[in-house]
Length: 118
Length: 113
Image 1 (cartoon, rainbow over the protein chains, first blue to last red):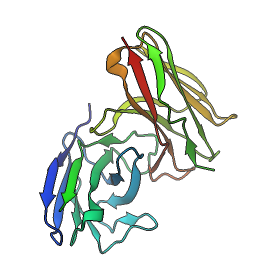
Image 2: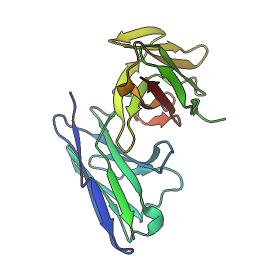
Image 3: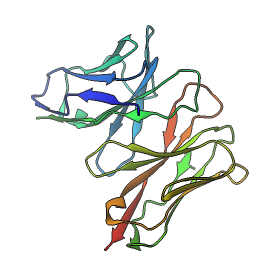
């Protein structure tokens, strides 16, 4: 089946640090990837849709300059949390679907990155 | 009204019983429906997808969809303690083809030995 790899799985860093998270589709090309954030005991909140070769589409309330997304190839999207602060501590999860424009394709999730900002 | 609603639970069932998880959605334009299982501290895992009215069976899992009632459910037969997790209902965002999903808040299932 489809496999999505996310790295790193766990990050602890000081306030003010920028953190980059990678999301790779391992056995298919993903023209679209999604980035979610999940706080404890809450559901997934979509942050942005990452589109290969074009700008990401951010959800309302998500700061574009804070959460930089780059989708430079068909198998890799990155999320950079810039100048992270304790309130950015969360579980960040990416997902990928096989083919943009075919909304019936399910999303497959990476293992997630647990970010803790001290 | 939330776009996708689930009872947060916990839903507690004895081992071997049938667990029934329910989900309602508000957007009549939604075309695709998914159930994900999420263990504590882990990312979601796809369990079932369903696109047309009726039932779809896969092993111990059966998904049911009723678009007229805007209702989708997941039945787990012969529940096992390993089924204990949070089950997330996800619905595509209207009739758009972006693939964007709207998630419910999830139902926590506890299967007791």
